[in-house]
Amino acid sequence: MAKSKPKLTYLLCVENKDCEDLLKGKVYPLLIDAKAKQEGYVRVIDESGEDYLYPESIFVPVDIPVKAREALEAVS
Image 1 (cartoon, rainbow, N blue to C red):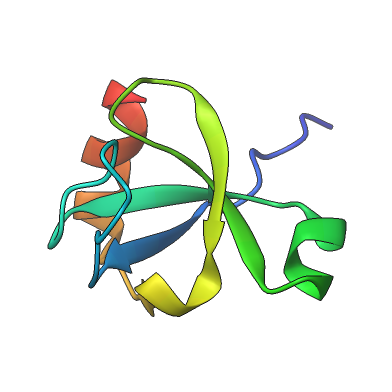
Image 2: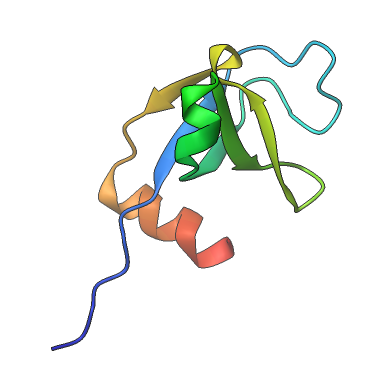
């Protein structure tokens, strides 16, 4: 049986003060990082194309429709 890809979670950046590699209003994929979460951070792939930690407080989770999710995953 083939394994299905895990469903990615997406976050909307609502504040980018002092975060040059984030765009306010842009949706970013969340990478699971339990240790970062415990410390109030999230790991996302930012505009540099690399994954970095950012304060969780500058993002809100978003529910992405299936068709939009497929389009986002095709380009990531």
